[in-house]
Length: 305
Image 1 (cartoon, rainbow, N blue to C red):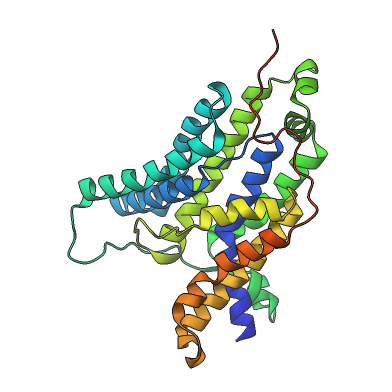
Image 2: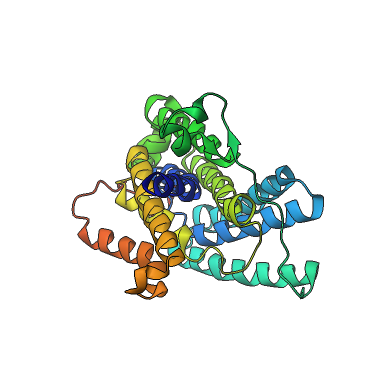
C-alpha cells in the first residue's frame, strides 16, 4: 500500500512540477504569474480538445501549450508592457478562462448525453529500470509527461543558477535597473519567462485531461494552479524547494484519493479529504517565517528617460 501511495504521489506531483518550477523562473525575473489557474484550465481544455478532435495526444499537448502561451501572452502584455496590476489582471484572466472553456466546449460538442472521453496517456515502463524493486514502481512506470518532468527539472535548475541567462533572469527580479544598465532588456526577458510559464502551465493542465482523467470539465483544475503558485512561495523561490513542495502536495493529494476510495475509514467525511491539500496549503503558508522574496517581485519596471 505504501509503495502504491508513493507512486501515486509522484504521478499527482507531475503537473505541480511543471507549474511550480516555471512559476519560480517567472517570479525570479520579477513577475507573479497570477493567471496560473486559468492557464492550467485552458491547458486542460486544449489538451482534451486537440486529442479528441485529431485522435492523437501529441496534438492535444501542442494545443495545450498554445493555449497556455496565449493566456500568458495576454497577461504579459497587460502587466509588463502596460504596467497594470498583476493580481487584478491574473484574477480577471482566471475568471475569463472558466467562461471561455464552458462556452467553447458547448460550441464544439453541444450538450452530450454522457461525458466525452479520450484515451489517457498510457504508462510506459522503462526497460530494466522498471524492474528494480520498489524504485522501478515508484519512478520508472509512469506516463511520458512524468518522464519529461524528470528531464526538465535539472535542466531548469542548471539554467537558472549556472548560466548567464539564469543570472540575467535573477538580476531582473532583484535589481532591474542594474540589469538594464548591463544591457539586459528587462521587460522583454520578463515577458519571455511569462511565456515559458504559460507553456509549462498548459502542459500541467493537459496532464489532468490527457494524462490522467481522459475527460474535461470546467472544474477539474479545482485550485491546483493556485497550489503550484503557493509552492513557489513555500519553496522560497528555489527550484529544489519547489520540487520538494510538489512531492509533499502530491503525497497529500494521493492520500486524499486513497482515503476517499476506502470511505475515509468510516470516521471522516470524504469532503475533508478532498479539502486536505488546500488545508495543507493554508497551514504551511501561515507557518512560513523566513523567505528570500525577489526584491522587485510584482513591481513593473519603468525605464528612466
